[in-house]
Image (cartoon, rainbow, N blue to C red; front, side):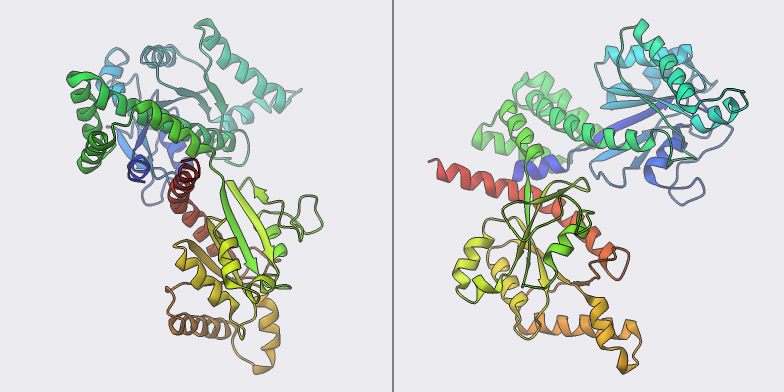
Length: 451
């Protein structure tokens, strides 16, 4: 757990570089989901706006820092001294941004990055401008023009026997071209990069002799990839256990493939199956939609490495034996408890059982639209009825001496209504938090079984 917690705080530094005016700052804003005038956005403009390397925290990847480097080939940052001035050794990966055409300065950057044996992307921006000018042709084909641009980029790379990813993007028309492909590819590959760099750092710090160890430690502290207390934690752990960097690499590889099991628990008729289908983006009649069987988990691209288990009809087990129910719960890493029958309060018994297992859960009341219809004769404002439900729920939790929790009120058939968006945000956040502890718990049990 201690090792994985330190790994979770290990920072990855991505340099966004290229010639001045290529659209580096605009690309960072697209990653951040910000407009140029928004607070916290990278400054953009027709003149040179970036005077020094500026860090931006990636919004969805807390361990990733994007660095907006000043443009290459200006009076302030000449081509010959650029790499040395920018100190490329500080960065783990590069995004080389060009616009319109490949220039000599771009190839100089590729050569320098290749020499340092660091990964990089080739990103051509302002594709919307290129398409606008090409549409004036009599026989215009967007597919043909994009292919020509890609081949033009690859031609120069092949001459030097280079083969990075090539992306054609627009930071204005973000829904078209390859910005989403760039985002998805980066998200997948930066996790792998982190899992490679962390053991490499450990190897230098713990097994590389005092010169390498000192250099590695100084580099980590200079770049704030880890705090001093994290480095001390690793050193103390090594003294106690003598773990090797190769073993750490194996552990991180296993973690990257670890499947989280999420149980969606509810009584018969509570809407468990419909909820699971909506959560993973399937209609009930679609192929792959959740069935009443709990033998096959549901999976979704929106929740990678997460398996959702449809477990309805829990009253059959609970009313027979809570001990048997706890045995079932022990198989899963996280729980979504569907609230339906308030009088029998099975959701409270489930919550107590999950807390006793020291696991995490969310509480969800489905069919809120139906509840509002039954209350329509009271002529109350909708928000008052919903607030009343939340207040009643909070009181029940207090009486049952359970942890304070928010209840998410949803309509299974409408992801935009009531608390569904908030539920998905909370679920994504909680699953990231739980992954490390669930993995460590799983490994501990596996080791016990094989002793």
